[in-house]
Amino acid sequence: MKFGMNLLLWTAELHEGLYPLLEQLKAAGFDGVEIPVFHLDVDACSQWAPRLDDLGLERTAVTVRNVEDNPMSSDAAIRAKGVMANQRTLDCCRALGASQLVGPYHSAIGEFSGVGPTEEEWNWAVDSMQQLAEYAGQVEVNLGVEPLNRFEAYLINTAADAARFVRQVDHPRCRSIYDTFHANIEEKNVRQAIESCADVLGEVHICENDRSTPGMGNVPWKTTFDTLHSVGYDGWMVIEAFGMALPELAAATKIWRKMYDTELKLAKDGLEFMKQQVAARWT
Image (tube, rainbow, N blue to C red):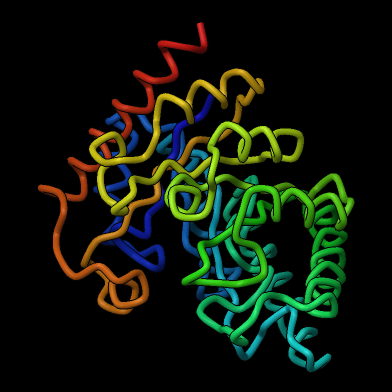
């Protein structure tokens, strides 16, 4: 198992002021960090790769798409723009040395039609992802398709949705992720949800029901870890928590109050929780 920390708790991009934090995350015992890739500057990303190597921190990455580059838009030009933006993001991942790119980049976040996805929208999204998967094979970066809850997206909301989508894309570089925050809203049965995507599962986001410290809320953690163990999962477990450090992200994730002592304490406590759960099962 590998344990990671999503940097969106602190930042939306890498910058010099983060270096002491990265040192602290490594010292705390994290294997790697999940890096937001929103500013598609390949040269800047390449400069960080050796520094992260020196720290001994592996990398995954996360991104989103918006209405202007929606890969499932009815407008072919917008879909093409979404594919190109995702490809450019993969270029950044390769420059960073990131092994995989996760997130809801299958469709525009926060964009709704008022109904569920049509068959056309689904097929447009699959076609866009197939193009991206081919490119992912060229740059040797894996894809992790993320289901979001119904209040953030409408194409893929459940683990079974994500698994069906990935199987239809049908490419070895395209897999799904499981996010405990979104699952806590959308899934009726956690065991069945994880089992439904087990064969295509490439990463797990460890998130509490209020997006704060994992293990201190109402997510059914015992069932979650029991099932991940029973299906033989052995990949990245990444803490994804949100706070108030980034006003734009706090507004998007609806974080109005601070729910932890410090960001670093959240990371350390969350890591201890994950390691305890894994040690009790993966022996």
